[in-house]
Image (cartoon, rainbow, N blue to C red; front, side):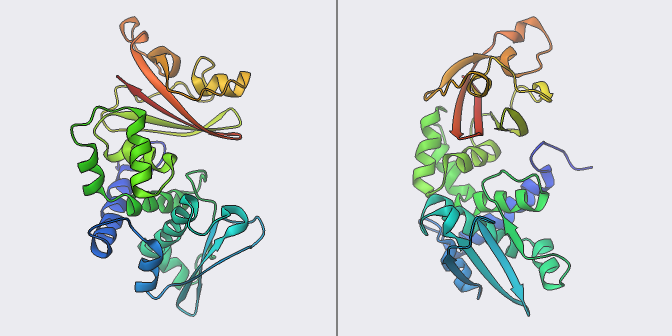
Length: 270
């Protein structure tokens, strides 16, 4: 039975990373990844346009021919971080065999996506993870992190280096970074999913996904409107289901990436 986490199965994580990394290394062994060029090399046409508010990106298959739509109504600019990530996400639907074959056989509708790790659908999460792996190849990512002490600024530096959002970078770091972290996504005061590095000290949240702990930075944002702009010190007992008193006051840090009702908490031990 595959090892589970709350975001994707461990098998998904390993297989998608290998797939996306091989593609990025093949087309761009050096320099920043250009998902548009990858589409062109694979005879995938694309268009940027205003398509109301129904999707971020869409992969369509007609008569065996693939086309990517990028919705500027939602993404605003064609070369923004979100647009790059959305384009890479749609490439995920093409390169992941199950997704592409379902479209080719007419067994699945065109993939209409809301990107950015928000969807509960497994296929959408797989495509999101593919995008993060494609845009942030493993070898270069690990080389940049090597021997650096983890601080939130590492996430910022990597996001700038690869032209992606800090949220996407945090998820990538969770999988292959050099320091254990946990990432928790909350929406409207509800925990939607969480993911830990394989060597993170705690695996379980204080209340599971039933309730967002009040004394966390995320909890205070939703309950009191307190929007912390910097890294905040917390204790293990604030977020985690601790087993004994000796663990309760272990010092941790939390940094929240907030956008309206969306909150991504990055949590780590010093």
